Image (tube, rainbow, N blue to C red):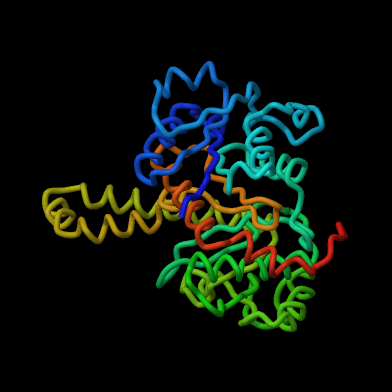
Length: 332
């Protein structure tokens, strides 16, 4: 299946070199044309006539330092906005950016809008857990939430888990500070009965140990809590890898052990490396948008394109539209 992907050439911290390299590699790996959106004057010399990459000019950049304000959003020719206009026009199936997450959310809401029936889009990450991965949603798009938002996050997260993880009836948990129904803040306590009555395979409240123990396929939380969870878990994973590497290289005997343990160490590093997945979707937009780390290099961006292609090929957008279409359009 052909997947038409747009890559924001001006997104990462070190743009546009990683994006150009990733575009060329992705065309070679997947065989499909890739649309690269950004400043032609900077991109053409780097592309050097590379085949399979279609260049679309966007003279402005929504910088990482830009605040989500009317002034910043008036950069109408920024690379994210131009790319999303192409997506809305049906010229591509999905868009990938390593740019400002808040900017991507605001521009997507302005250019694409919400999917019919969705109250708030949710940033949904795949966490490495025992036995595979778990969808955690929201991880940063909505710092203030209502119970009905979390219900929809769970519904969209369950669909993503079905398609991305191959879970026909994903187990859905609600992140809390205890497993009992009475635990949690007001948001958790008010969300619990909605999930219980939702028809989802709701397993109740879960703590961090259940999440990382692989006891849930989808874990739902507000974007403030989810973003802290995401960044903390990435930091802990880096600490473990760095500490293990330092210990294994600390002496002659441990270096011999490191050589013997290299396959296991590489497998652990691959499991914990965010660059292996590369990007996460903003579920609930009227278009498929994946967002990666600002520090993404070419390898991470190729992974992001691979992850996005898999979502296109699995039919994520049609599945979401079918499931969420009757949920109402209220902003409440």
